Length: 166
Image (tube, rainbow, N blue to C red; front, side, top):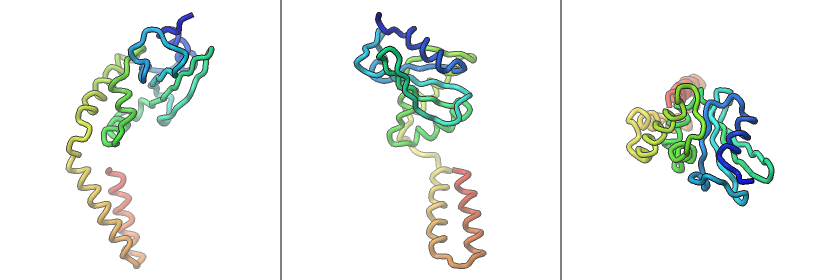
């Protein structure tokens, strides 16, 4: 019996019944029937996930590598991935093929956003971000040179504030 997209979808929906969307990615992205000889890469989006994580599902000799992505933090995930040298998650979302989309086509919107960010990857980082990084480096140097408790306390507070802004 051939492994089809419907077979994969049924397995993913069984293990992730509350998923808002599913994307097929990886080497078998453009296939309609899948070989057992290689794994099948899938991205599952949902509000029930707390962090990006991976999981492997083995079913009837078929291996499905699942990347779980929390929807509540999708903007931060996309933003952070756009600055990562490899941007693996961004690449998966940019190139992936949507095989299930619920909640008002939210996965289509994520895919469009990922495509836009992927094209901008490596472009100039926003000035504010560069300024925050510069200030963090300066504070780090000041902290290394400071011995007084009160000065270290205020520098540490400033450091925490800048980290929260980054």
